[in-house]
Image (tube, rainbow, N blue to C red; front, side, top):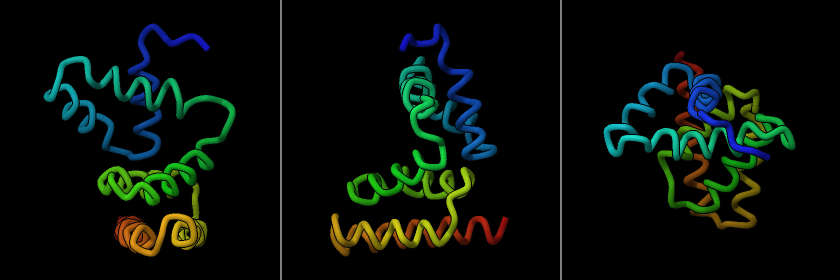
Amino acid sequence: MTREADPLPGAMQLLEQLAPSTADKVKTKLENFCPGASEIILGFAFTDVIARQGIDLRTREMLTIAMLSAMGTAPDQLDFHMRAAMSAGVTREEIVEIALQVAVYAGVPACINAINSATKAFDYFENS
């Protein structure tokens, strides 16, 4: 696979699809931290990896929330990807099952963190 000459537009489009009204905020935050950071980080994550054809976006988001839940070290990203998963079509019931699966392989504390994050996402979509 060859890298796109300018991966940022594709990354911004995918980010906007997953989290409407968030892409520009994320880009601005990264650019304020370091000029060019949005292309490096978002271009890699969203264009080079997440946009690949081998796994559909919905499945990628399910995998992402499972991994972030198990890691337990990225609560803001877990919150973001819980909402993104729902935007990509992952159901509330599927998120519940993922959280319970996390308890088996990553432990109850990681499961509780996933439940807390999922609850925020459920509230977000119920109140939007």
